[in-house]
Image: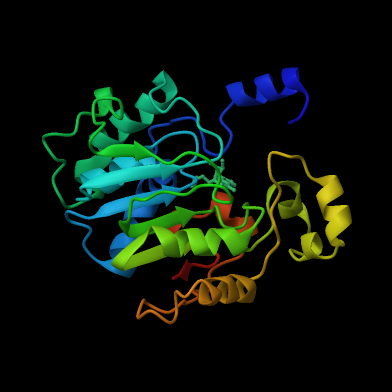
Length: 262
Ligand SMILES: C[S@@+](CC[C@H](N)C(=O)[O-])C[C@H]1O[C@@H](n2cnc3c(N)ncnc32)[C@H](O)[C@@H]1O
């Protein structure tokens, strides 16, 4: 994305998510996945402070976490879009409409999707920079990301940033997709994308960020080196899931390839 007109054209399109369509499967994927993962692995987030790395084109995940009980939400993304854009509001409004049939907890009366996030500066914050560069004095009860770890260029910074942002009893949940992405999903052998040398893989990618191809044990090691296993926090676990190639046509319950929890 180094050529300005190409960069401008790409920035006008959704980068990481999908355009809103009033479909439960899309809402599950782009709005509820974070809340459901957090509730499943961590339990209630009532009154907790949350930071999410790489929320994508909208804060659908963030408004879902706030509606699910979080007291505050911070976003850290290396590409910051207009989270108040009309296309983003469609997600927030659609989420509230779908909420009663998809979630037990009532939608909070204070949270108006039409004026989200701009009307909530006390609840919604932003941390500038990429996970490789960012720093903050704030500490959070929950640090999370979904489909981001496999895109960062340096997991040896991703892990310490996680550790540094955690409050003393905090928990981190990172869902990392270790499978093929983009055109590499089309190969019969799903491991084809792993068969190229590092330099060739980098040369084939764009600077929007290719999958880093870092494996699960490398994440485990990076988190351990950041002290996340040794400070009484929940150890990393792996959940096996289904073939990522089928995911686009499958119900969301079949989507997870692996989940790493620090
Ligand atoms: C595949 S998208 C996932 C978006 C969203 N979490 C989801 O599940 O749909 C990856 C996101 O991570 C962000 N990202 C990638 N590398 C990053 C980095 N090094 N630091 C911060 N954000 C990064 C991208 O800008 C994008 O928003």
